[in-house]
Length: 221
Image (tube, rainbow, N blue to C red; front, side, top):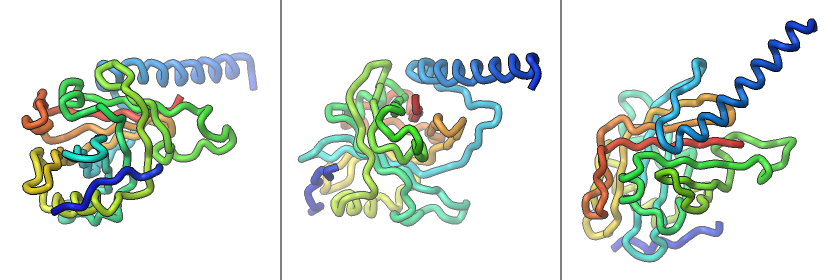
């Protein structure tokens, strides 16, 4: 039997005008991206960098039923099962947000406000510990970042090591999951997004399904 999932606590005038114009456009692009990503995927900036990562979401059947999000480096083409210690993001999504909500929306927007961090050292975007979460254009609560998975979550991730892409329920564990490759797009130090590459829907057992697409947006404002 799986261990119980337990929550973790836890120059010239012209040059000046040009510079201001560029700064204004950059500001507006960030604002527009935040608004647009609530409803439609935000197109990457011209200088955006992309990579492929492995993403796992699962929903425990008992105890703390918050959806967990795990992102880890995908590695090269021969590395189909990256080690668990390569995860760079572990996130607890808000209580009450289930797979059906995620499947219906097809996108999740997470917003970190600068006022929550020291102004002199905002740090890396994905290292932010606290996020406001929007699903289907509706604010649904807060998400919290953790440094790593609990023992019970490690058990689930170990069971899923052989799954490169798919969705379903773990036998005996009652844990619903979605797992696949995500394209990671880094638009700026304040905007990143992850887009599921395989057409996988959340398990039908949770009332999910949808069109199988999922995008997750992170913004700092």
